[in-house]
Length: 339
Image (tube, rainbow, N blue to C red; front, side):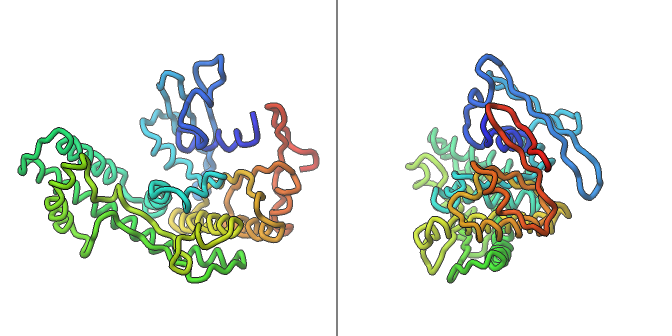
C-alpha cells in the first residue's frame, strides 16, 4: 500500500472505480476475490453522516450502497460524494484528447448545473442505435429520421447545460488565478459543441444529421454531436500547453479544479472533496502556500499526499485550522504525534 492508495480508496467510494487503472484485479489483493471500501460522508447542511460502501469482484460483479441501500449506478455514488482529483494524469486535461475535457465539463454539468442524468443516457442510447444502423447498412430514411430527432433533442439539452457551465467557468478561473497571484495573458475558455451549431436548435441538428448520412455511412459512425465536443483552453490564441511552462500549466490546472470547487459550493451549499496527489511537485514554496490558502478559503476537505511531510506542511496557511498529518509506510497508516 502506498500513499496514493488512500486517495484511490476515496475515489473508489465516489466513482466505483480506481483513477489509476481500469483493471479491477490491480486494486484487489492477489489472493482475494473482492475488494471492499466503506466510508462516512458528512452532509454540511443537514449535519448528518451518510454511509457509502463499494464492493468489487474480480469477475466483474459489484455492489454499491448509499445510506445502506443498494444503488445500481456509479452516478449514484457520485451524487453522494463529489470528488475533484488532481494527479500527474490531470495534465491530460489540457494536453490530451477532447474526451478528458468533456469529462471535466460533465463533472460540472452533473454536480453544478445538476442536469438530469436521463438526458445523457437518452443521448447515448440514440447515438448507439444510429451507429448500429450506419454500420449495418440499414439506411431506411423513416427509421433513421426517428432516431435522429430523438438524438437531436437530447443533444441540444446536453449542449445547453455544457455551454452554461463553460460560460460560468472563465470568471471563476480568473478569480482563482488572481488569488494565486498568477497572470495568464489573454486566457480564453472556448466551448465547441461538436457540430457546426448556429442556432443550437433541435431542428437545426436534425437537418445536419440528415445531410451527413452518406458521409457517416461511409465512416460507420455519427460524426456530429456532443460526443465530439471540446473545451479549448487558450493563452494568447494558442493551446495552453503550448504557451505555458510546466509549472504554469500545473497552476492553471489547479485553478480549473478550484474554480469548479467554488461553483460546486455555490450551487450545493457545501464543499466537494479534493484528492491532490503529490501537489507540491513542480511548485515552489510560495506557490504551494497560495494554493493552500485558496483551498482553506473554500472550506473543503482536502486529502494531500507528498513524499516529504514538509512539502505538505508548507502549503497549509498558519491561520487555518491545523491539518491532520499521517505517515504511510509498508501498508501501515499512522497519525503523526502531536497532530
